[in-house]
Image 1 (cartoon, one colour):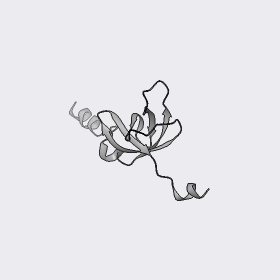
Image 2: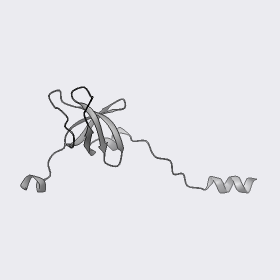
Image 3: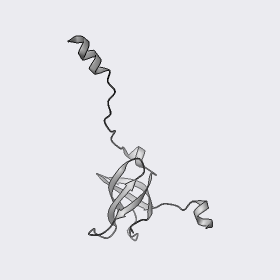
Length: 93
């Protein structure tokens, strides 16, 4: 019985890790959906962190589907986002 318990204890865990604000800060993503949401709210996929509910970090900023965003903060389980800065290569096109 002790042998089995030790064997089971050595099996690597495949549990997903929770995302902390330190990891999410400055992460980029894409807005999935803004339909049915209040102005400035929507859902987005954040690279390496999955799908999150997001709100605009600036009052006058409106989210649009397909837009690239950057995480600037977090309020509970909702991320504050702003437009992602354009890369040099995409600005030249």
